[in-house]
Image (cartoon, rainbow, N blue to C red; front, side):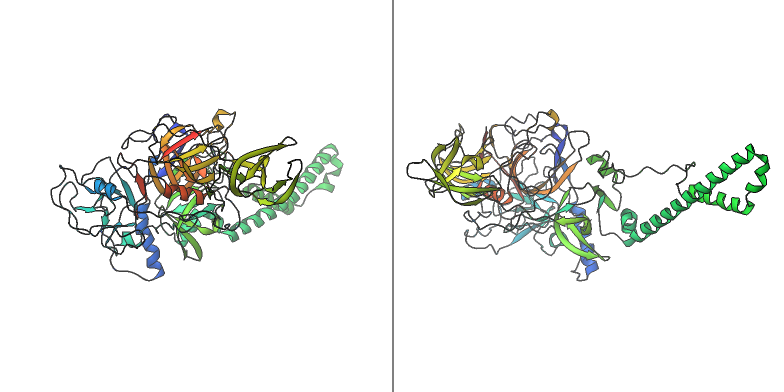
Length: 632
């Protein structure tokens, strides 16, 4: 799909592995999920039973399909920024019910749908009151939400494994779903094969932990520190750990190293003695009278020969040895410790009944649960796999954030320099002095007034002091989209200024820094963010992005459950980035990166709104996505 084109109609399949290099992995959102097998009964309280329970959830959460994704090189390492700064934006909006008109439109069954009338259901509660009515829990990786009581390519959204949503608890019989359809209170229908009102069902109870929307990130994320770390399908036994993680047997490796060192020393000593004997024999051949003087003790010669043979058997002597088996990719590394050649497809080749795949250093997993087993700490990922925590560490997300647009401000300024100052001028603006200090990513309103002093541009803030232009950037809105309705929300992305502004009609309401696509003169490394006017097509609280490097020697990358993703054009999206904190600079593979806090703000402000408990939502003609205008 040409990335500069507007998104195609809903239901059109996005190209897999777009442009041949990278892709987004998400669970299968486009195909109906089969009914799961019967769940295990009764709650179990022992540690072993809890761990085994992860396996049941993993069998469902591990199902994945391919779609396209942001392209390019592996992302930089995780941020190590400090604690969060004081809040400087209004409270984040929460997922809310659709408007009554939209909910009614979504919930209304078509004439060709089953004729059984929906049962009466409780009305959605007022926004300030928590919902306490019946809930429907997903028992498959994604329970598709349809606009009518019929399977189709048209989806409203989906509910993740273990997710719970408000529902009319009485299923409606008929149609192509033998178990009946459940009507969601926020619009749409879910087939009873994919969900249940029995919240004690193991697939619901042991499903993926709901995203924590009160934190900076919806999940905790772990950074893989070593090539070859396995992702197990289930909790491994001790024998399996030793088989798939040979580096754990440190004592054996130490003994082998010591044995090798002793053999090397023995070989060097023996080589010297053999060389000396050879020299003596040569001298004896030249001078037969001295043969008796250099005759060697037969027992000593035999011992030396045995030593040479022993050294050769250890692979030290230049003697023929048996060919070693080919090393796995994670052991076949160059002098810098980088695998010589590996792709995502190579990682899948490692899969068997025990290990799903091995990870490249730099991969991220989203952590669902942490538990102990066999003397080690483990992470259960949101994909239902099991990773050893001693090969990973939990990252600290960047804490930078934008601001609500200040009253009376013409634009918003941001500090990008590592250290900067506030300035003030005298009454005649002939001299300037420092009036205070500023931290990186400080944000403030600008009046639109600027002044040049000794070739340096300064911009006046709404607080009265001046910002030095070279210390940062500022928002600069482009023209409104041509089809903008009065009062409609839209998003302005300025690639030159590297800023984003959320606007309602003609009123800016929020401003933030972005990291657009990284430009390069090397076409293989050139990942521009394309300009144009688009509408948000679909939104996901989190979805996985991965891909191969575009240049020889580049390693694959994989980031599980990238947070707060809003696709607007093919595989390109506005999304949170926790793996770097360099906002205001080009960093991405073509998507628009925001800090996690800013991505969350934009995600819940923009349309289509995410209903309660849903993990993803698609725009519809009745519930259109927010306009996104991207310009230089």
